[in-house]
Image 1 (cartoon, rainbow, N blue to C red):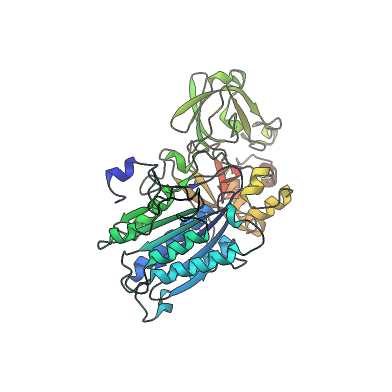
Image 2 (cartoon, rainbow, N blue to C red):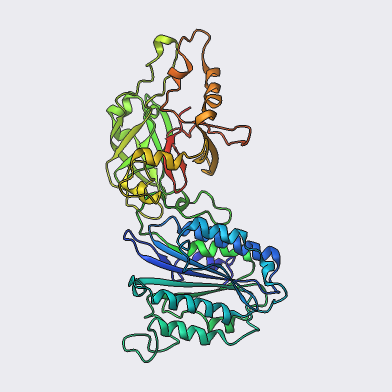
Amino acid sequence: MDVSSPEFKKRVSFMRNFRFGEDQSHLNIYILLDTSGSIRKQDFQKAKDTTAALISKLDSYDVNMKFQVISYAAEPKEIMNIASPWSNSVEHVLQALSKFNHTVHGKKTGTNLHAALDMVYKRMAFLKEQKDGRFNETQNVILITTDGHSNTGRSPKAVLAKIRSLMGYNISTPGKSKDLQDHTAENLLDIYVFGVGQNVNKKELNTLISKKQGEKHIFILKKYKDLGEVFDKMISDSAVTMCGIAQEAANKNPSKDYTRPWHVQIESTSSGTAQKCKGSIVTGNWVLTAAHCFKREAVANPGSVKVVHGMMEEKFASSVILHPQYNVAGLKHKKVNEFYDYDVALIKLNQSIKLSGEARPICLPCTKPANRALKMDPTSSCDQHEKAVFHLEETPAFFLTEKVLTRKETHVQRGSKRADCIKHAAVTFKPETTASLAEVVTDRFLCTGGSRDYKDAIACKGDSGGLCSFGRSIAISKWQW
């Protein structure tokens, strides 16, 4: 199916998905990249890039995964061996993929898909022999990208039959697939084929895929750049309530709700004046934002505070709780008009937000969900979280801007970089101010902005209360001033 067609855009659940839930599971992913002579260098690079993006995305989920990556022409070349101790390390897998050069195939530029699948079969057979007993509990996914023609070696169908037999899926086994044209009962095996280009032999490719009722496993694409959108749609996480999970923006829709599911718009009215801020879902009942977004009237009358989330759904506050040490006038005696230390607030909603793909919490440091997001031990401390997030003096972070709600990058300046960053706050001081810079910008503030190495985006009016986040959207600060 052409992903640029209206039919593609209308159907969002037409295929078998990677399904992720709250419970941990095991997943082996075998990725076969066509590097035959008919594949242009730039197209192979695009295939590598989209594959890397898929691997990075899958790494966001609480699933135990191992990867096998193969480049195949007349002979297969192993980019990552699933039997390697590094096959479950996304960092090592991506590094191996990045370093791989298609020229290692030399003049052997035929397309031998049988040999590539036979390498998959041998690796699967090795894993089955292991004593951990997980083979029969592990989902196996084979992803094949090709320009559509296998012209060297034996028929790929022969080795696929061996793979199915290895897993106990054959016509002679009661309770398993009764017909090799119906693989619905093969719960632990899915074979996808992505045919790319103008001369794809769809009939041939259709003999390779898993054929399951109500599911699609073959995709015919015009260009390699279309792989990214298909890969993202294959990830089914709509039922997942894990923090910090979002799908990537496809094409030109960076503001879709599923790309920023924790984001909310907060509207309050005090003395006839409307105030708009941003905030983030932390649970189905609570939203985190900035204290300066609320005047006394809003705190006393929380029902005037509206929270818009997901698909423009509305909830209202049942209470607004400001940090007890927040005091915007705390340094008035030193001629500082506005002081933003402890500028944090929680909104308790009058109705729970139903968590889904469009409404999902952000991760908060020092919590068990953040342990999972950071892939750290369940007993990890706040100090360990801080070191994991801020291991650089310039840490990349992201925030949402007003209006189109696009994601912008900035950098948190710490260590020796912090002093040069916070000094810019002094330009806001009045001549009569007697407070020191350290009194106004306390150690509880993070300083973001450009440096000699980076030119960063800046926050605008209306961005207040929105979170500055890191990695798998772990909240590290709020926008204030």
